[in-house]
Length: 503
Image (tube, rainbow, N blue to C red; front, side, top):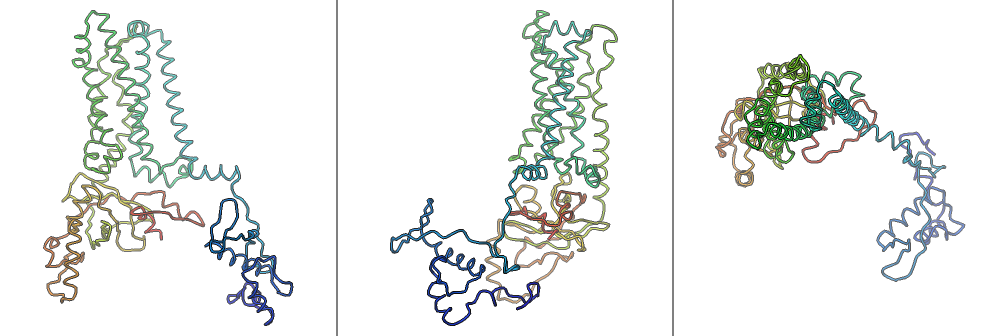
C-alpha cells in the first residue's frame, strides 16, 4: 500500500473495494439498504461506511423530507427508517475516519471576531460621541454658573446657555472636519502603528459623522438664538419688527443665515442618492464650505451679547484659531494635487466592456503603486475642476495603471463619450460589427496613442483620446490583505475592482 503522504496515494484503491466476488455480489445487493442491515460477510471499513451512508443520503435527497425527520417515498408511499448521522471521512487518515468538528461560536471567539470587524470602528465613534457629550456638558455648566454672565442669563434664560454650549461643540467639529479628507495625511498615518488603533480607512465615515454633528448642533444653536432674539425684542418693546431686524439686519444674524444656507445646501446635495446620481452637483456645492468658514470667522466679531465686566469684547472672532491647522494642511494638499496633475500622462488603451464598464489603461511617469490603492482622476475636456476616485485594477508589476469605470453618472457618461464609448449605441454598433465581421479589415486605423481600435464605420470613434490628470495613488484597506496568511475576497459587480490588482 502506498504511503498516505505519497503524491500518488489513492485512499480508495485498497480500502474501499470488497475482497472477493461473493462479497462484491453481496455488496451490490445490499448497497442501497441501510448500513445497519449489512450482512456480516461483507468487509466494510469505517471509510466504506461513511461513503455508503453518503451515497444513500444523496439518493434520498430526491424524496420528500418533512421537518419531523420522516422520509416518505413519493412513488410507494411507504416509510424508510432515517439514516444515522454521517461520519466525516478524512482521506489523509484512512484508519481514523471520524473527525470531531469544533464549534467556533463561543462567546470569546464571537467577541474577537466582532473586535476585528467592527470593534475598532464602534469604539472610536463611541469615544467621539462621549467627547461631544463631555464638551457640551462642561460648556453648559460653565455658562450656567459663570458670575460674569448673570445679565445675559436673566434676559435670555436657559436658551442662552444652550446656544453658547452648542457653539463650543461646533468649534471643535469645525477644527476636525477637514482632517479626514486630507488623503495624503491619511495615507501617511496608515503606515504607522496608529493604524491599528485608529480606523483611518473609515475617514469618509468620520467626515460624514462630523458633518451630521455640525448640522445637529447648528439647529440647537439657531433655534436657541431665535428665542434669544425674541426675548431681547420683548425686553425692548420692539415686538416682531425688532425680532426681524435682529435676524436679518444685524451682523450675527446675516452671517448666521449665510452659514445656515451654505450648510443646508451642502447637506442636501451630499445625500447618498443625490450624490450618486449627480456627483457634479455634490462636488461643486460642497465647496460652499469656503464661504461657510469665511462667514463663521466674522460671526462672533460683533460682540452683541456682552459679559457683565470688562474686558467686554476680548475673546471674540476666535473661530480661525480652530480651523487654521486643518485648513493649512487641506490647502497644501490641494496645491500638491495641482502639482501632481502636471506630470505627463496619456491613455494607452481603452476597452469597452459589457455592463457599461470602461477600462482605461494610463501611462504616467514616476508612479509607484501597491495592490488595492486608488487614484483621483480628472479629465479636463469634461471638467477641469472635477476629481473622482477610482480603484486601481492593474498589478504593481505592470508598466501602466488601469481603472475600470462603471458608467452610472453624469461625469462617467461624459468621460465614456470622450473616450469613444457610447453605450447608448451599443446594440447598434454590435449589430453593425456582426454584419461586417466577414468583411476585410480595410480602413482600419489606430489611435496615435496606441489605444482603442478606431473604425471608419464608426465616425463617433474617430478622435484623439483625451488627456487625463491623476492624483495619487492613495492607500486603502485592501493593502492590508498581504498581512494575513489566508484572505477571502468577496465582491460583486464593479465592487470587484479592489481585488483585480490583488489577485
